Image 1 (cartoon, rainbow, N blue to C red):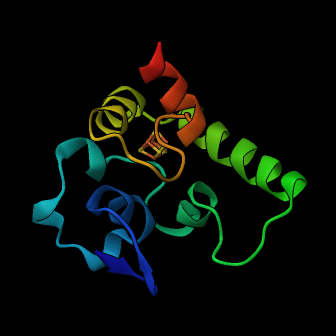
Image 2: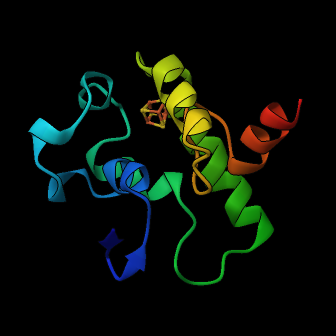
Length: 103
Ligand code: SF4
C-alpha cells in the first residue's frame, strides 16, 4: 500500500495514516491505539535523512506513548506475527522485534 508517496505494509499504513483506511477495516485494538492521528510521525523514520541522535529522540518519544498504550500487547504480537519490517510497534523497534524472533 502506498501512503504519502512511500510503499508501506497495510499494518504500517494503519499506524501511519489511519485516516486513509476505513474504520471497518481496522481490528478492535487498532481503534484504541494511542498512536493514531498526530503522533504517527514518531513511529516511523522520516523520508529524509535522520541523524542518530534525532532517531533516538524520536524513538524515545514513541516508546513513551507505547508505554501507556492500552493495546501494547496485541500491537506488539501483531507486528511480530507479520514480521513488520518498519517502525515502532508495541514499544519495540524493528531491530528489537527481530532480536526477539531470533531468540
Ligand atoms: S503500542 Fe505503541 S505502536 Fe502499538 S498501538 Fe499503542 S501506541 Fe501504537
